[in-house]
Image 1 (cartoon, rainbow, N blue to C red):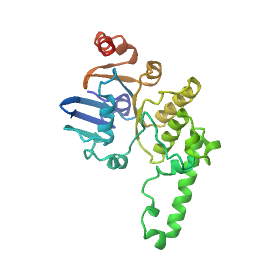
Image 2: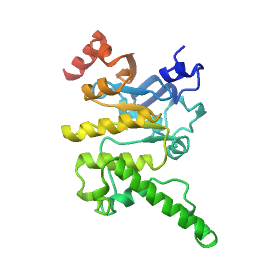
Image 3: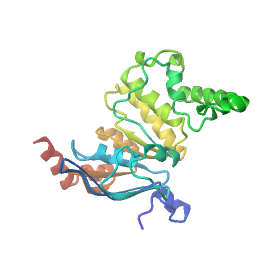
Image 4: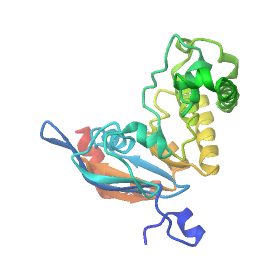
Length: 267
């Protein structure tokens, strides 16, 4: 049985939030991901670590639908995820952040968050004429939701400012709020601690812990091992595009194969 803690508590082995099997992807003959399996349980906070060039971000991009793998399958909450289709992943309840956020700089912080809203009737031409009350009600609800999310990430005082004024850490929080507009059940977080000052890092840690306590399943790429140790119930280590070991953060950090992988990457 390889169920997550949440699966075990429920008394039944439910489908995993993410079940990836045999994922492979090569660039110019070099296998960035090579036969990788990964399971994320419902409500689990899973860390994905490894030396630079291990294939972590490539795996993220496959899971998020940005890259189409050469082989393998991805199930999201038990449903097959069409390969290379990021929009379909959002529809299945999966959202992701990027290591380097890229907001729309001229748009306000509030407008940036609103771009994450999904399935709005006003996105189509005819409802704006034939169902204008529905469109207006949806837009009003989306604005209220976006404001609540900005309050959650403590960006309310800046909501009418252009996104270009935000610091790097604030842009990470803005991106998190924008992803949450789509109501994802699963979050892929790509190095949320990178380039963030210690005070803001503590705040980010608190926010993502809150999201996990709310029941969101989270897969985290992070080089900050203190953050990984504090957040992640289980850690998977990649090296050379392949699975290496898994276990608690403390255990894997002491594993001889992990130490060798990191030292080899640094040589």
